[in-house]
Structures are given as C-alpha cells and as structure tokens.
Length: 480
Image 1: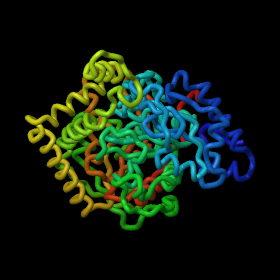
Image 2: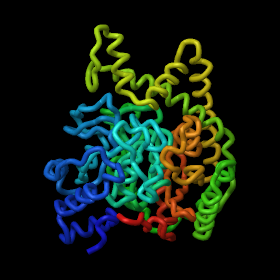
Image 3: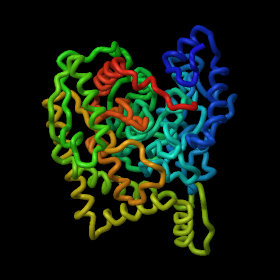
Image 4: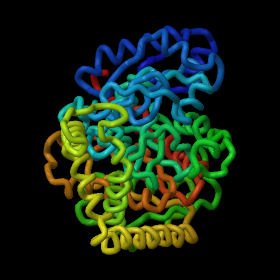
C-alpha cells in the first residue's frame, strides 16, 4: 500500500476507486495522525468526530472520501467558528460557506477547524488566541500566517488538501515556508460568502496542496459565480482546471522576472539562487524570459496596510458582546462594549482596529485612506502594463525562509514579511506559491508566479510543467 500520509489526492482517489481502502478507513488514518502529531504542531483547533464527518458530504464526486481541513475563519454548518479569537469562543455557525458547501457536494470531507492568526491578522500564526502553530520542517520556526494551521496540516501529512484565506499573503507565505503549493485566486473568483471578513476588498479563499494537480482539482470545485450570495462574485462559470496539466508549458510563453523584487535589498541569497535555478528550468522548457520592473512595489505594502486596517476596523465593529460570543458584564452599555472588546481581542487585532479607525477618522481619511486608494489604482495600472509585455511574472514569495518563533517583535518588521505578496493582493490578480528548493539548513523556499485577472488556468499549467521537472514537491519533513 502507498504511503497514505503523503499520498496525493490523485493517488488516494485511485485507491478509493479500486477499493484498496474505504473512505471510513482513510478518514480514520488521518484523524489518528492528528492525534499523534498535532499536539506538537498545533495545526488544528478542533478535529470532528468520525461519524459526523462521514455523514456531512455527498458519497460521489471528484473529492468523494478525501479528507481536508478549513481555516477557522470559514463557516462550517453546526461547527464552532471562532476565528482563533476569544471573542467568538462558543459561537457555532448556522450555515456552510459557499466554498465548503461546494466541496461537500463534490464529496470532500472536512475533518476539523485549522488554527490561524486571530481574525486572519498576522504573518506567523503567533497571534492565535489558543496556541501557536509550528513549522514541521523545524518546530522552532513559524509556519507563516495567517493560514499557518492549514499549511502545516498539509505539509506534515495530516490531510492532502486544505482551505486557507489570503488577504495580503496568508496562503502564499505559509505555502512557501512549509513546501506546499498555495493558490491566491483572482478577487471574486471564489465566493466570499461564509468567510468572516478581515479586509473585504482584499480577502480571498485559497487552496493548499502538495501538488499543482491537486490544487487545480480542489480549485475546480470552489471556483465560479455565486451571484445570489456574494455581490463581488465574478460572472465566471465553473470549469476543470486540471484539463491542461500535461507537463508542458504553453507555446510562446513569456515570463517576466520582477528584478526589483528578486534582487531587492534584504532578500536571502539562497532564495535568489533557488529562483534563478527555477527560471533556468522554465527557460530550458521553452519559456522566454524578460526582466521587468514594478515601480510601485515599495508603496504597495503601505497602501495595503492602510486599506486592510481601515476595512478591519469597520468589519470588526460588530463584535461588541451584543449578539454573539463573549460578553463582559457592565453597568453601562458603553462599558460593556469596551470591556468585551478589550478582553476578547488580542493585541494585534486591537492594534489594527486602532490604526484603522485613525486612518478613517474625519481629520485623516483624506491624508491616509484616500491616498492609499490612489496608490492601489497605480499598482493595478502597473500590473496591467506589465501583462501587456509578459504572460506571467516571477517574484519571491518572501524575503527570507521561515523565521524563529518569537524573533520578530516589531509590527513594522512583521508587516515587511509580506512585501512581495501584498502588491498582488492590492492589484486583485491571482498568484501561486510553488516549491522551488531548500536552504542549506533544509528550510523550504517558494517561488511566486503571478498572472493577470482570471489567468488561473495558465498559472496551473506553468506551475505543473515546472513541478514535473523537479522533485521539490516530493520532499517531506522528517518524523511524520
């Protein structure tokens, strides 16, 4: 029998179809792996009971019997939904997110709630109100954030796929740190219905997997228009994103290397070398390489910070102790609001709410928020201009490999971990993190492929061709 823990969805599908294993047996294996390894990894906040998981999804479909896990900001009917925050402890969702419902319709099984930074605010998964998640390649290091839990679960062989969310890099950065494939879709390509909002104009549900094929398979189930439930959903019909994955690049493919990102000050030399080697491999396969510049790269992160904090302050105003979750009793209503929010929110969430309210205030909105929106238009214009010259761009995902837990104490320094991911989020275009090597100390390195709006099919095709010529995706952390 194949190694179940690190088998791909494609391999598990064949085993299930050949009746080499049953869905119940497969689920039991993965639940036992969580019991065995997750006490030290911290990837899950809750694992559901076996019978309720088996009874929650369709019995047939592309993902029938294949277990996965969803980040704890994505609603699952009848399950707790805490956003890894004390303020929502005990809250139970009354409905499924559209992405969850569609995966269940395809037969996929959700076996739990994955750990994350509180309300998806962070780049290290150190802001969860319940516990840290640890990188399986080195337990002393972060897995990335905010979707650290879903990434760890896939990397350590606890599930073959997971759903995360990406506001400014929260799928791509953990994928790079943990040696996963991580997809950020075009804004509006996946319904946000059932996703607890952090930054409404930036949030996207993305997919973690070990291979590009598996990522495309899961994405095929969740992508597509959701007009009735999400007004920002794009009018795109569902399709099979695995259909062009034949291991070959598209003919006449032009790839743009963003030079002022790859060769920026502070980028780890080992990351530069790994991406240069990946570029050479793509060149060998027939891609034409062109060096390009993204002029507003340095300003995009600042614009993202202002826009995301402003939207966070607005979105989190409803968590006040009145309707659901934590309520701290007080004699006066205003005191109840204040005490509940102070006790329920962690330091990072409170910090972002304060910044958001400041940049939206009457005296500063024009100075900060309005200017940030202008920069967003500039970022979108720069990307559109680049994609007139090239089909896809290549950039680092992160300036460094996974860093030590607790080593970054400055909020500004932590924000700069997303310097190469936030511009894509601000532009609303799709991107994918693909494994492309390891450091000398055996830490994963990811490469970021970026495309124009709705270019997911080309991203998958290009990433798959690269993946099939390398062995990085087949490597797994020791001890799991």
